[in-house]
Image 1 (cartoon, helix red, strand yellow):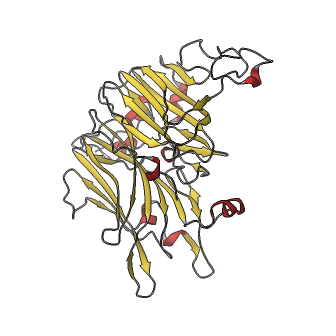
Image 2 (cartoon, rainbow, N blue to C red; image 1 turned 45 degrees about the horizontal axis):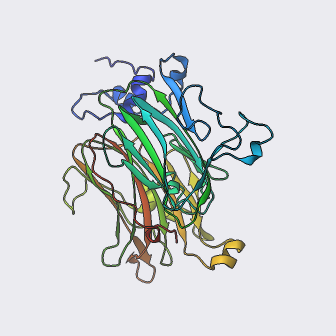
Image 3 (tube, rainbow, N blue to C red; image 1 turned 30 degrees about the horizontal axis):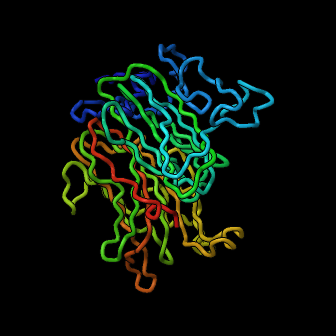
Length: 406
């Protein structure tokens, strides 16, 4: 039987990553391949669209048409650097003086629409102090709750360089998200300073499109977790408590190593739709394997055991920090080895129809006996997924003494 040729990528295909899968739909091989198209197919740029593009920043806090660059020197939150040039010349480039405990609503957008791009930058020592939360439609609790840096796979020290498809972090600390975030009625995003000091400047820009969204659209979620594993149970829960239908699309992870030698022997497990505790549907073969690496990320075991970092469209090991800079050494002394990694399940989303739980084991290696070593390590992770609403409340971030990096 002759199979139908794969049609060119279109807006319909582009939004498949946002839609609930239909597992019983019969598809031929070529059609299944079409389902896994890039997030941003270039052919879409050759077609007209009735969508309206808007962008929110400190220079246009509402995103309204013709409302950018309206601040005058001397207005609240403006910079004296613009006093000579006046209105229209970078008068209010950032959110200023975010006080301890203060929450600011960055966006409150009436739908339907889709968030297309977010950019943030802050000083390098406040990434865990700032918490972002995203609320959709009429749901009272947040669907995204995460420290700012960790959301952008930049939670170790704010100095990661990430060159991936949905997340890019560029010098120095320019953090970009291209995760599509559709909404039907409302999109509200807040930022909170949970740190002990005022944050003088928060730069941001959030670009979105006002347009209809499909009936079967699902909503972007992200949740941060942190735990200290134990020798009795050396396992970190990346996410649990997800209820509904959707697909899991990514993991970012900061691993503070509190033992010597190798740290990444543990398996990543996906418990899908009622799996028992001892029976995950998906079980990997090692932590570095899950993030697309192998053999400890080491290129030459005979001469140099230093791991090699990398950043690719869907897989990355962006930082392997084994010591202090001279400045850090004078300030804080030695530091434990720390690792920053990500994996995006964009070509291979993990579908679930009822519920989902994901764990990673903390296992090293006893070189004396060639057996696994249970580790007591400090692991922080962000889980990213799309699902139907209503969704379950997320785990709270906790106070700063549960968030400070090692």
